[in-house]
Image (tube, rainbow, N blue to C red; front, side, top):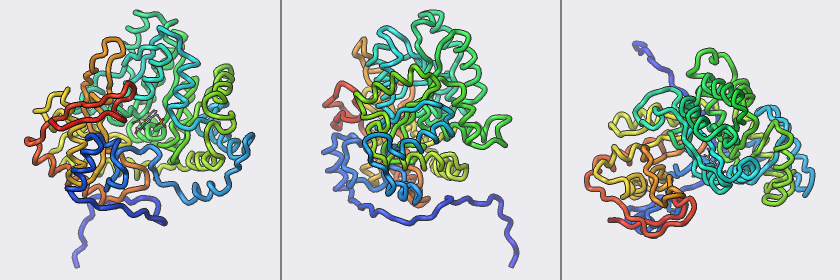
Length: 463
Ligand code: PM9
């Protein structure tokens, strides 16, 4: 038999499946009922009514056998748990921060750092907003100012580092309000709301240099920092031969401190981190954690959770793990491209972000195209995504009007180590079906709107 030349060798996940969780198949009629009851908000669906759950990669990842084994050696002492010290050692080892306070999840750490560093009337520049981060900054009295490069707001721009800060925008803000009104610059990477887009090390160094000159602190939302490190390794000159661990450590070295929602990179179901080089900030956080979370050696977590986090931290930097994770997202993107379905380019870290403005151009932004599209995909197949557009952007606290973001997206987020290529194929085919029928789709009307983070609990009706 003639030998066929293999043009490109396939890759596969660096793990095998040991435990499985059955999922329920539903009919269109079941989903019509469930969607109506949920006010066409995918956050309000019951998980048992969902077939393939791409709502988030937050706390939904599959833990490894080492992490589960770790859960059995939780030291549940109220004070000084062994697991806390193991976790603290790993925070020093992987993030390079000497001081650390645990928290029950990312927004608890955001709350503490915002209350510690921000004064009424301050400004926080950042590389695009994140919902919970910005809210905590606002609740502490600050105004968030987006200083990400313009390319990030263009879904088709293929800039390899769309998470970069535009130093000119940052400098403009500093000249306008003065450095004293800016307690810190906030950088996240990869940038969630921009489509999982990373920043480059070069840009980070420039921002750090600028902040040093102006005596402004630099803080890091390191929730998915390993993915950012992976993109630097893959895309940035001079980093191909460095390990993810080395790149992560270098990234963190430019910041005074960081927070992490451990529910992502660390692949645990719950947990958060606040870590810093600044002893004074640490002491304030350590005092504050006992008010809002629990003693500073557990921060609202069980000992077993901290053990799973510490092990997860060792696994999060494994190159093959990240490669397979981002490889899944890329695979999904390449399949969608075959049907001409519009989504944010380049393919980012944790999710595919469908471009709802292009998908449903006949639906005006205040009729919630992304909310509508997420609901339609669910109705078609039981695949659950998340709105990342006008609903998520919320209202301007001063004017009370909707904020109209340039990006109106549906996020299909891949939990780590959970779904197979076949799940992705089913998802893509469902989206293709919805795309074929897109002209018949009508928008939504908001009928209930909570005060904060309305995307979680808002309710809608079909127009
Ligand atoms: N991110 C996500 O699905 C969970 C809920 S918000 C829709 O993407 C960053 C970059 C995040 C993040 C949560 C948090 C807050 C901070 N920064 O959810 O409180 O992506 O652990 O973290 C979500 P917690």
